[in-house]
Structures are given as structure tokens and as C-alpha cells.
Length: 389
Image 1 (spheres, rainbow, N blue to C red):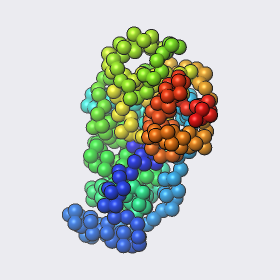
Image 2 (tube, rainbow, N blue to C red; image 1 turned 90 degrees about the vertical axis):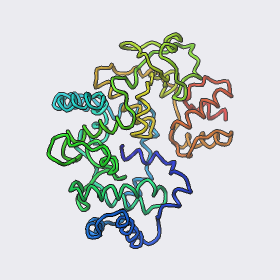
Image 3 (cartoon, rainbow, N blue to C red; image 1 turned 45 degrees about the vertical axis):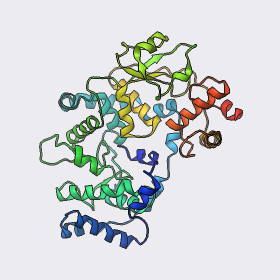
Image 4 (cartoon, helix red, strand yellow; image 1 turned 45 degrees about the horizontal axis):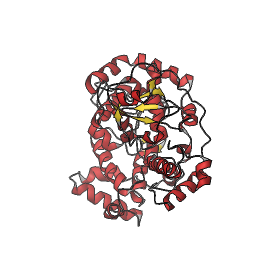
């Protein structure tokens, strides 16, 4: 799971849940509470003291937690920013260099190599930059902060278990601002539950071992529900007279029904699976059918534009053509999106946070509002819609 996904996953459980998790107050008292809980969980007191002795708050973590601007970019811009010919070439080269590892992953976990290569590329640029935040400091900082302590506090005790196994150094282990570690950026609990010793050295070291990281990522995707041998997305062409209200992740129907409506693949054949028709930038932009495996991406990251780009890049790494960008209508900038979200909420639509990010809730609200106003209900917010409201 990318660190950035945690900034998007702001459901925060619930207020009641957050209140049940100790947070805030004196940091010294907070650390003492962590120690007491760790000992109560059965950890050796001396080991706990060694683990927590140097832990401190990191204000840079909190600053990073509040930044989400990259996810305000539309799909075409975001994907062009993340996908370069060099990144594609290096992905193909890594696929060849680690072919035996990917063969094992496909055999054991059913995850196609392009999927993991895309995550590896986007999370850490194939391991070249894995984040320079002290992981323990990041976790204690976000646990002390009262926004989402129920998410981060358990990760501290998972990191403690890794420390006891010899796979975590509280002083030297670094990673993303939200506590993820290694080449494919996994949280300590995910490493405990899905970590795989891919190179046979007796340790699970996601920072230094590509086989460990890739095998662990494959196992994690399988645990999240990945279906072996099935596609995730497929680019399609869509007729101009399409019923746009049927588009979006909320509407799943057999691919044969989409074919009957005139939806055709740009390459290959449609899979005999239920699918949603996704228009990342409306009816005049690129179009994709999303199959059941696409839903698993949202277990890895909550950002629609990240998920869409990672899923598309995975298909490119496996030979799919460059998507047809079409000619999308101009969208909204961050401040305009916030204005739109506020207006949609005032009309009774649930958009979640007023954050300027076009997430699933906002897309559904846009589609519903477009239908109410008699506009093409493709879920793409435009200045015309904002002006109508």
C-alpha cells in the first residue's frame, strides 16, 4: 500500500473508534502507554524499551499527511506524469531480469507480472527511492496525532514483532511518511501477514531484496482477493449514443451486455466476466472496462487516479497499446472542485470530504446531479456543471 493512499483513506474509522484509541497529550506519557500495552501483549519489557527508546515525533510526517495535491490531477495528466518511455523500458528490463521470480509469483499467487512491475515502478521507481522517513518515528507520530490513531497504533506493535525477528531496526529503518517499508511499500502488519522470504536467506527484507518484495506483494494481492488468470482493465471504444448513466464503478454487468451496447475492445477480446465501464475524464476521454480484479487495486490504494494509472500501466507492461486520450472536456481545478463538492453536498449528495479530489463519492454525486439536470451523466465534472449549480 502506498503511503500516499493513507492520505486519501480519510474515513478515519469513526469518531467513536478514534476516541477508543489513546492519542494526543504528553508525548512522554503516550510512549509510556505504548510500552505498557506492548508488555501487556506479551512482549519482553527489555526488548520493548530498546525498541521505543529513540522514538520521537516528526513534524515533517504531519506536514506530508496534509498534502494531497497530486491526486487532484486528471487521469491523462497524472498518467503522463508517471509513465515515461524510460520507466516502461526499465519495467520491461526488470521483468526479464526477475523472470524466474515473476514465474513463481504467477504460479503461487496468480498475480500477473505487469501488475507488480507497475506497483514497483510507482511506489519506489523500482526500488531507487523508498522514502527517507524514520519508520518508527512516522508511526508513533501518526499514532499520537488524533486523526487516525486506530490505523497507525497497531502498526507500531507489528513493527515491534519485526524488530524481535531481526527484520526491523528502529533507528535505521526508513520508508514512506506513513510507515510503509520497502520496494513495494508495505506496512509492518502487512509484512507480518504476507511477507515472503523470496531469496531464501531466512529473512523478509523488502528494502534490499527484490524477490522478497515482489513475492510479498504478490501474496498480499492474493490475500486481498486477486483472481488468478483474470484481467483487471481493458481499454475500449464507446459509441456516441451510449447511455452514460450506466458508466462508473457502481454498475457491473456482463461484458456481453456492454458489447451489445456497442462497446468494443481496442485490442484483444472482451473477457467473459462482469465489468464496469469507466470514463476517467468523461465521455470524450479514454474509456476502459474494469473487471473484478480492478476492485483489488482499491485495497492497495484509495486514490482513483492512482489506481487507474497503475492498472493501465500494468497493461502497457504486458503489451497493451497507448490509450486513446480522445478530447476530454476541460475539468476543474482544486478550488473549483471544492466549490462543486460543497454545492453537491448542499443538494443532498454524499461527496465525503470537501477536499478538491475527484474520488468515487464525488463521481457518483456528479453523475446523479448530471441526471437531475438533464446533462450527459458521465461522472466528469466540468465548468458547465459548476455553473449550472
